[in-house]
Length: 499
Ligand code: NAD
Image (cartoon, rainbow, N blue to C red):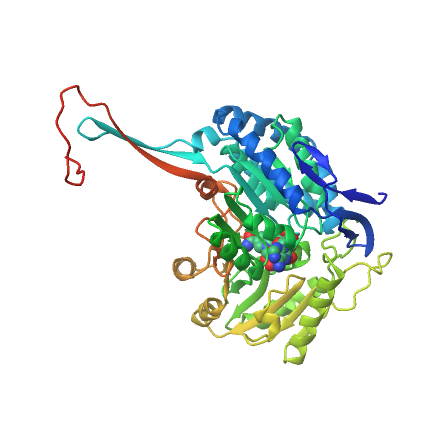
């Protein structure tokens, strides 16, 4: 593909914007610059907010069923064109084509959920809540809302947000990751084709500067964020200080506990996909295997040949299981953390540093890595690596495994592999983590259940997509209504009671 330029989507059309700064877009598999991103200015954001504010006046009054019909049409277009969207992801993110198609499929499920909006927006009604009085609750849209998204799911994570925000009657402004921005414009174009009014979905490209402008903008009522924990915390604090509703999902360090009675083959296969799929660049990736009792040696022995045999290459390469990392800086950071782990005493059972993929020697690749004998004070354990590195921590028993997990600052996902139902139940009941898998390595909730971690993996009260997103993107209004008879009764000064 020839060199290209990616701009914004404002008021239903592609815009070059008025910003003067450009940023390179890399092909992570070759290391080459393939395009340029036009970074938006505050004036571009103002233009997007103005068109959104105008358009939402009518969109918020459009019946939910009519809004859902636009999403139905969009759903059809997405299903027909899923390969095109996946191609854009592979080109800029580097993940394999089957993985990109999986990302698109999980995003489509949120659109399917959002087409049920007439049902989801129904309030509650109580007749005769007091004598002659009826009460009901309803949910109304917030107005103009924004989403700021990470590089690792350039289509799916925006789709966690905008189908529900729009379905609820809001206008949505997306600030995608600057690393892989193209899929945002494809989705914008297809939403327009589906009949979405201009201004209801906008895209402003940019980095930290435009994010800070979004947080401070008086015309934006709410911000959804997904990304790393330091930025999530910043978004939550600053956005809230401007009176916005904020949900900010952060980073992770997900553990998988392998009990001595676990189906070892099943656990090994699960770890392979969960630790090395998408080169470990998933917020739900398993990055720590917690080997309980005597399972550690068997587990590592079974994993090592599979990790050495991983098929690593450009995302279209047939049979490729893992692609490159997103940037050169990311590649160097992951290699540094592997090195620090080894220096601190971890054993590199498989060391993926220095991998050169034939034909793609300048790509941002790191090979699959296993660090055994990792302890909780090593930087490879305390930092989110976000690469194809599995740390193995050995503990004597389940209590020690739980203590390790609970001492961690993150609490996004966790898994336990065991054949003992009682152990699994106790684990599920007690563990202080937002998403839990039992013999399931990546417990990513489906579109109908909301997604979110605990502790420093999520700032704010609402999880992403599912019913929690309907609550996030709407305001709750309670109504009490009485139609008095014409006989005057005089004022009542005591606090109203239900009599
Ligand atoms: P990131 O935090 O660097 O960037 C996320 C977004 O914030 C991007 O749009 C970026 O432009 C913007 N941004 C970056 N630095 C900023 C700053 N200083 N101030 C304001 N905005 C800034 O994250 P990333 O590298 O794109 O994505 C990887 C991270 O996202 C990992 O930590 C991963 O765990 C996390 N993630 C979490 C979830 C989740 O659901 N919890 C899902 C996917 C990714």
